[in-house]
Each structure stands twice: as structure tokens, then as C-alpha cells.
Image (cartoon, rainbow, N blue to C red; front, top):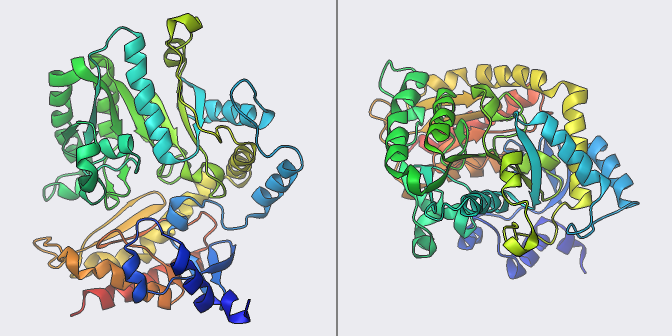
Length: 454
């Protein structure tokens, strides 16, 4: 093997001859260089030619405490000498038990039982099936549908796609998907001039109320991403919607599934987004930051009444027969425990409030840009909506790929930004410094200037 084969160009060529990458039109890489990463440290990734990139999006929202975090590294090294994995049917291990105990203490009240899978989409599938099966075990066979919000995203597997509503991901596979009931999103980007986000979100709830009144007899659950529709262009709404939704689901006899795969573990300013509405869902789906960005793991945390609906003699065939080979993986659970320890040791939520304020200050001038319709923020998530005309909010034609221009400028200047269409966003690891925030937002500003010109 030649030396150049271990540098960027050589590794990129090898990659493109054998690998198919996610969420990518691979033909783009005829012009867009593939970047092999050699190592990571803190908020930085370094390629094989020695160039560094600030990871402004936490490597698809998973990394909380920086790459190669010493505390998580040490925990995993210790775990490797004890147990890497064991079948989780009929067997258990202390790491998964301890993680479940911790999640029971940290998640909203009433969530007591943990069911593990290995990615966010799988957690959503578990919650959908568990809700349906609960009602089946209760003798309510007619409950087979789900209510979801427009512009929602819940994953790429077929059940998760079915309850999502981002056309880019969903439409191709429409013939394969179950029918769902969709209601308008409380996304505050659509509010009237002078209308508060809370008032708009509350006003939009009437559509959900009407859907529940009309369909609750056939609905298993409502599924939402609390506060932020991340893959749906980082659109945001007020906690009042969750408060109203919890009350309505109880009143109409329908489960509430909170998909906090992306927004959980401190992203929105509280450990879990549902806390801002003081509500407990029937099913809480968690993944991404659960292991600090180290290993695939997801969990559905649910209530004891749901668990008891499946607890029966085997001959009655009520068991939840769903499984993943790597359920409760010991290494992943250890990474999750180490991540939770860092929250406690570092007073992370308080620190994040300081970082969020810094992000807000660093982007204040973005609000006056003639091609910025909105700068919106919820905790450690900040998004900048680029438009062709600020007054009318006329978007740029999607075919122009203005966001890709920002992405390419970022890479050229040591920054990993991966806009969602024409929405530039920041979701950095919690170890970012104020100086790095200033650098991140400066490069983004320069990229936006370039992207909207001409």
C-alpha cells in the first residue's frame, strides 16, 4: 500500500469504489471531495492531510461532550475487559440495569420501563408497535392509526417514515407505507406578524383537537418531536402545544409518543424537551446523544401500566415479541452511563445556557440580513432561514442548492456545516468554547454572504 493511499485523495478514491454513503447523491462526489477523517478531539475533526474541521453539527446531532472524550474513553476501556455484549433475552447485565435505573430517575415522572434497540428509527418502530399492541391486548382491535404533524420526521424505516411528513424522505416510498392522519404543524415560522409563538402554537392546536375528536376511536397514539422538528428545517414551536396535547390525549384515550431522539439530553435547554411543558409522554424515544455520540443505542422508556398490559401467561400470547440482536449492548450502555455522569459532574445544563446565550449574541446581526427570514433558537439549537426575499419570505428555488454553497465554503474554511436545504443551523457539542462559537458563526456568515450573491 502506497503512502498516498493513506492520505485524503487515496482514501477518498478507495471509499468511492466500495462505499455507499447515507443521505447522499453519490454523483455529487464527482465534484465534491470526500473527506476521510483520521482523528477527533473536542469539537474538532482532523483529516489525513492535517486539516481540521469544527464539528458545528455534532456529527448529525449525536456528539455531546466532544470527540474522544477522556471520561467516556476510560469507561469503555474498562468495560472492554469485562463484557462486550451478551444476549439480552433470558440474560441481563449490570450496565443495562444501572442505565435503566438512571433513566427512570431522570426522565419525566411515570416513565419506569426501558426497552432497548440500537438506533432512533428502531426506537420509533418499537413505540409504534408497542402502542398498537397495547390496545390490541386491551381488546381494542380497531385502534390501528397514528396522528402525526406535518413537516415531522421520525426516521427512515418504514413505520418511522409512515409517521413522518418530510416529502424529501417519504414520498418515494409512499406505496409501501401505512396510512396516517396528519395535522398542521404548530411551527412558529408561519405565525402572523405580531403574533407570539405561544399564541400561534395554541391556535394551531385546534387542528389536533379536531383530529382527535374525529378519529380517537381508531387512533393508537399521537407522535411528535417536542419543540423542534429537526430534520424538518429546524422548525420550532412553543411548549404550550405539548401541554394541550397531553391533556387531549388523556381525554380522548390516545397514547402520546415523544420522539426525543434528536432533542433529548440537553439540546433544548432542559434534559428532555417535554420538561418545558411539564408533561410525561406514554412513550419516550431516545437515541443519538444517549451514548455521547460513541455507539449505536436507543431506548423507549414507557410506563408501568403499558408494561402490565403485556405481562401475562405465555399461552395468552400477549408478549411483545420484538427484538434486536444488539439489544442492551454492554459497551453502548457503558458509554451512556459515562455520558450521564458528565451531565452531573459538569452542571452541563447551566453551562449550556451560557453557551446558548453566546450563540444568540454571535448571530444577532444575522437577523438584519436581507436574505434571512428568521433566526430561531431553542437552547443549543440555532437555525438561520435563508430566503430569496425577506419581505415576502419567498424561498430560493431548491434546485439552486444555496445551502450547498454554505457547506462547501465551510469545508474550505475548516468548518463542518451541513445545511438542511436553505436552512443553516448550529448544533455543536457542549464542550465548544465562546471563541469557537465566534469562529463558527463568522465562517457561517461569510458562507451565507457568498451563497446568496448572484
